[in-house]
Length: 522
Image 1 (tube, rainbow, N blue to C red):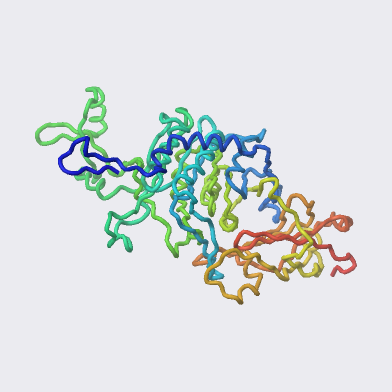
Image 2: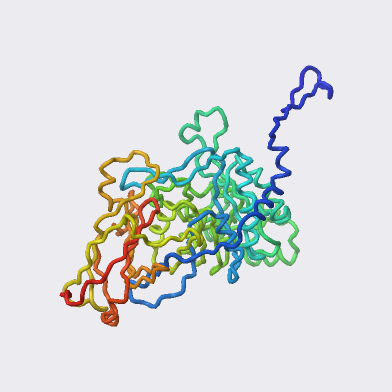
């Protein structure tokens, strides 16, 4: 802080700087981040925990999974990806990290009327700790990009200028492309209208590329703004088409005469020529100020209950602009998985990572409602991969029973979930009675009739609807009838039947079951 008293002179100017000034620490943060990265273990592997193939239940051919959902700390995940021998570089990385807001964020479970901690945005040493956290992750993200890859980070004004300094060093200042301003809220909304400052309705997106050779597809607005529409003041009497006039500039005489033949020259009463731009042909490219994408609010169909969820329209614009069809998109702060949902809709491959198990559970439910969902694999860091335990089982399944008659694909087996005991994290507004009705906590569950005790491959899956005002017919059932192929009947004694449930907080439990004797068939 600079204080000047009286008439200005250099002698009277006093600079008061705190001992731990961020300005003094900034030059050393990058070096510390590199040292942190050197100390990071690069010997961990990502192991498959579950293979989701929606076509299984319909008896169709199973494709190899082309998408990946990884649960865990993104620094460990990035380090594991960096040493994968068959890793295919990414075309686009979009991240929406914490904003150094000094707040905790909770995911709301509508059907239970409770909230669970989604993630904490609190830092022991404030902004310094936050920046130190981000640096090694940025370095590895850049390494995982293809040479033609693009990188977007979604932040706000609290940290945007600090992160830009770091990203200029990591990506190269020459590879900075844009700062995009997204007006997420209306000015004057709520308490903003009475705050003693200009309202905060903007988020910032910093756009970098790994090199100068990168794809970019210009996005055009669907509708013109009122200001743009007012420019079309003229109407052709013979056609009724509205147009605006623009100075000819440095067009050649030949070009002007060609436009005149095409009826694209407007001549004023004074004899001056202008070029016509017709309203019905108008296309305005989207610039770096995005005011046409509405932020999510309570009650919207797209809202999943996850805090800081971004609208799909925002991700759609980024992916269409910076990732070719069939390309690879990654989000290492995935939250409730909007990046993956949009990538799936747009025929892009996706890789998502997050530590928020409740967010990943929401994402899997969001993905389940899509048509033609493609197979994906759920992975964890090797040391974090656990197996079913016989100690105090939290999931109980009623004894399996053969159903009446014969199913189209073989024998049918009736299964029913009996009880689930949640390991409840921090909650708000919890009703004690709800903990007793344990099956109400479930998000989704699946059945693997031939579990190999390594990878869970659910042949049948059941999901809860996302709640709120949604109308998807995905109400969670706790009973199911699953077909068993005829070819398995003589081998049932050697097979393991496994049920896996995931609750609304992303916690999982598994139960191993035995097939009932064949002589009990209906």
